[in-house]
Picture 1 (cartoon, rainbow, N blue to C red):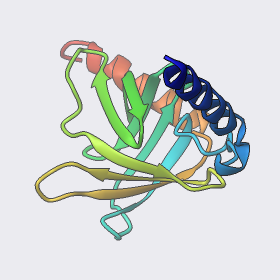
Picture 2 (tube, rainbow, N blue to C red):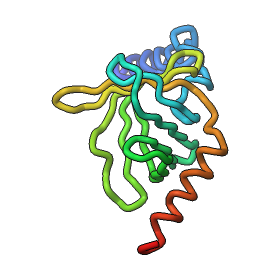
Picture 3 (cartoon, rainbow, N blue to C red):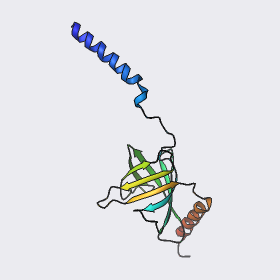
Amino acid sequence: MKNIKIFALLLAVATLFVACDSSKEEPKNEKNTIANEWRIESWNDQTPEFDVYIAFKEDGSFDMYQQIYTLNYVCYSGTYVAVDGKLTGTYADGKAWRSTYNYTVSADGSQLTMVSNDTTPVTSVYVSEIIPEAVKVEAAETRSVEALPFL
């Protein structure tokens, strides 16, 4: 019984030392977060022939503005989960993203790298950039026109 008490006491003391040793913890960098506004810079090490802005918000929602198959930007919204370097998302209509991603954010928070978990992975690099109001307005106008039948 005496050995059990000594062992429990030693375990408690060891736990306190580990919990109090902050020298092993990396300092938290508030800039090192996915919650930010981003603009695509490269797609598989190439300058893309399209444009994408994405805003990952603190509340777990996102707005993505793409100019890919059209002359105008189109906005897609939904929710995302970013945990332990893994990124998943769902569009507002309930459809899951085509892929999940491994991601990293540079230490200074200026660059986001996403690698898709596809058979042939795609690497996209984004830079921190505020989404221009003109892009948001254009996407809203495009969506309004798409909603109008047979004009």
